Length: 234
Image 1 (spheres, rainbow, N blue to C red):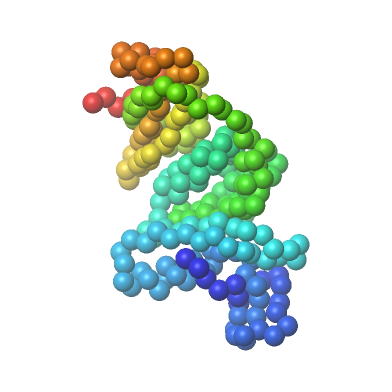
Image 2 (tube, rainbow, N blue to C red):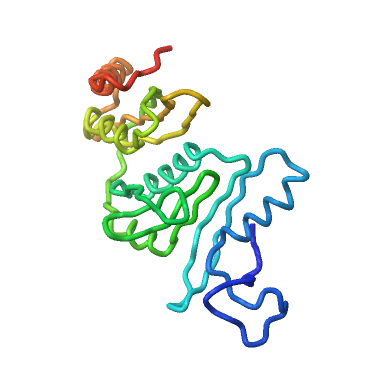
């Protein structure tokens, strides 16, 4: 979405507003997205939208990234946020209490956004700065990669990064990448399903299927060492 920069309320008031009912610069993107959903819900049963743009406060302007889903589920929204942060190489984030939203997203002592049942808003400029601090150069292997998928059931409060840490530690250096590609929570269940793509790649030789299968087996054993986690077979 690309919405106007004006809002009914805000911290920065315009001297000569075009629309007298919207005489402030917007402090967030979520309000505009909610209006988009309200209008379009008459035409679509499911809506998933996002926007990246400037927001304004007395401290100045900042770039924000926000998304909204209708209908929305907290587990799916949280999974998307975790996926974004994981892709940026940020793994030390956590969710804490927020006075207005379901949770605040923090990295150390820094707040990077908030999340509720059907959407989130992130401080994009802060994310870029934190991601640049975490970046490390890795040479590209000349040997082909071997791909495997793995899925498991975990309790609802299990963080994606907890599972990824076990997979990474078990796969070692040959496990070059882990990506969450599916998160599913069924109503009434006390657990959720997480599914990951795994890429195995050696810097020294071409891996055989047997070697990749052995690594996958080791990862499965490490995951199932947690009695609350169940790797899905077949």
